[in-house]
Every structure is written in C-alpha cells, then in structure tokens.
Length: 146
Image (cartoon, rainbow, N blue to C red; front, top):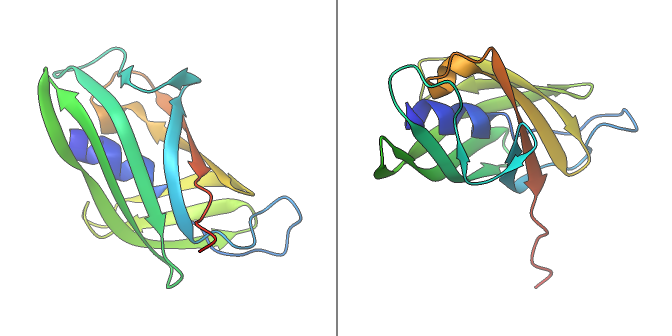
C-alpha cells in the first residue's frame, strides 16, 4: 500500500511546458510533498481499511524527457518502509497534468499544475483509506545555481 500511495502521489508531481499564463512553462526538476489535505508531514492516513499508513516524506523528480520518478518514506502498521516508489511518463494539457505509471500497470492520474507547485487529488483507495480522496501539495525545490 505504501508503494501505491507514494507512487500515485509522486506521479502527480511531474509536468511539461504550456502556453497558459498560470500553467508551468519549465517544470522539470525536483518536487517535495509538503501537505496532505493541508496537514504537514508526517501524516497518518485517516480512515484506514486494512493497514495504518504514515507518510513521512515523498520526492518526485521530473525529467526533461517527459518521464518521472517518485521515492518516499513512511511506515505501514508501524514498520519502517522505503517502498514509496513509482516511475512513468507525463504530459501537460493546459494546467492539467496527466501521468501514466509504468510501475503500477499503466495506472493513470491527473493533477493541477501552477508555477512551481502541483496539487494532486489522489483517490483514498490508493493509500488504503475509505476517504473518497486526498489533496496532495507538491512544491518545487529551488535548483542549485552552481
């Protein structure tokens, strides 16, 4: 379940350019998950079905060749895990990101992109929750000028 949660959330963090003023024009880079439903990390996933999942940190890398990779840490039922991984491809249409996971059997996701941020609406089932969905805020990390 942690793998699904991390991969889905990170998959949403990637993007490519657009001509819309509010949409990102240069998004390849590194993004970090800042909040889930407005709560700072670590976050315990509410209304768990079978497992208690805590998400500690998630990082998404968006590449210039329209691919992404996600990695994160957390716990499942109190056991530390680094299984939060995903990878795949992305496209941008206006300010909507579309992701296709190569790790999760072609699962697709979408998100709203703004300059240096992505808001992913993730179905609750991806993190073993009975909640309908969660909003995940990813923020781009400033690149090293050197």
